[in-house]
Each structure stands twice: as structure tokens, then as C-alpha cells.
Image 1 (cartoon, helix red, strand yellow):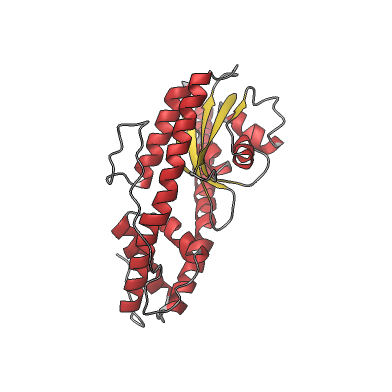
Image 2 (cartoon, helix red, strand yellow):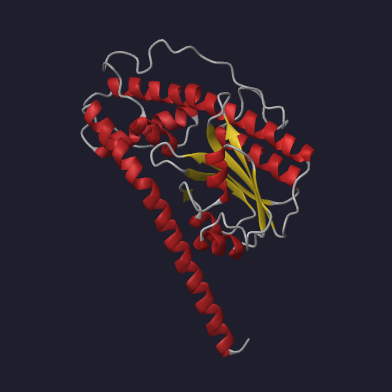
Length: 285
């Protein structure tokens, strides 16, 4: 390789390193305010000496129940505070049976983490649509909109750009508003996208996409799974849309159960740990 070629390769490598660093900084900036807000709430509630002790409290509950720290922090911020420090946070709560997921054999009742279930949702959706690019989003309790939780086959820039989406400018946002499957036959010409979103999708190699809302038994959208294709899409068959309805309905009911059961169990244990640690300095593991 010539000197000029080596210099160009070095510059390209440095540029990508800087872009990765910026993506990482943006990812941290999206999460840190939420974590900090939850730390402040817990520090005040349990008379903890510092924010580090509050973080350690969340970390213990997160690890005990295999619930993401970000998910737990979002619930601390949005859930009503306990009525009394020495009483349960959610008194009178009745455990619910875990919904079955018939669209995949990868999940066994009682054994699946949320991450494992969302991976199965994505895998099943991509199999039905016939592609290897896609992502799963869940509703963001603290900010509204949708946040990416799982993805495959998509570029780092795509994941960074669409890490959180609001109520406009994307097909997944429209599918969430309408609580209905949305097919984008051609990304380049569909008016659903804002121009920045369109450019980001095309740059990732996606030319068409199909979004499926994850819905509760009452019809509430709690997430979205989207399949992306590298070619324009004529449409899906009735059998495909019916299969995706099954995935979306079962996944949505499972996510609602997880929030009402596993996440609330984690909050209840966090509350018990906080009462026991009242005024004590804690260290993260």
C-alpha cells in the first residue's frame, strides 16, 4: 500500500473511532438524567447519605430480578411513591400467571428474561417477513415515544439515530398511534418519514419496512417490532399479517405482565432494601 493509501486508511479509522465515541456519549446522555433523577428520589426517600448509595440500591434490585437498571429507574421516577415507609410499596397486589408465547419455542414459562423474549419477538418477525434486519422498541415511560431495546442487521448509526423516537416522522411512530401494522413499500418515496429519518434509513441499506405494534389485551401499544428489507416491498400476505398479529398480541401481553409482576417485584424489593439501609452508606457491586 502506498503512503497516501496508508494515510487515508488511518484517517478513515480515526474518523470511525470518533463517530463511535460520539455515539457512546449520546447513549450515555440519554440514560444518565433518568438514573440521576431516580437516585435523587431514593436518596431522599430512604435518607441515604449520597447518590452512590442510591445507585447501589437500584443495582441490587436490578440484579436480583434481572431487570435493566434503566427500566427500574424509569419506574422509580414514574410510579407513585409508597404510601408509608414501613408498608409495602404495592399492597394487595395479586400475582398473575405468565402469559404463554406460542410463536416461539425458545421461551419457556418462568425462564425467559425480557431481553430473551424481545429477541424471540424479533427473530420470529424477521422469519415471517423474510429478512435479517430489524429492531424492537418499547414505550418509554419517562419520556414518551419508543426506545430501541433489541436490534440486528442494522448499522450503528441507524441504532444511534433511532435510539428514541417521538410521535412523528417515522413509520413505527404512526403504527404506535394507529395501533395497527404499517407497511412502507418504498422508504425513498413514502411521506410518513421526516427527511432526516428517511436519509438515516436509506443510509443503513433499508428500502422498505413493516412495523407491528406490541399490544396489551386492552389494545394499548406497549412496544413495536419492525422488519427492514433491502428492496422495495410489494406487500405481505394475509397469512403473514395474521402471524404477525399473533406475535404482536402475545408479546404485548407478556410485556404488560412483566411490568406488572417482575418489575413491581423488583421495586418492592428495592423498597425493602431501602428501608433496611435507611441512612446507611452502600457500595455498588
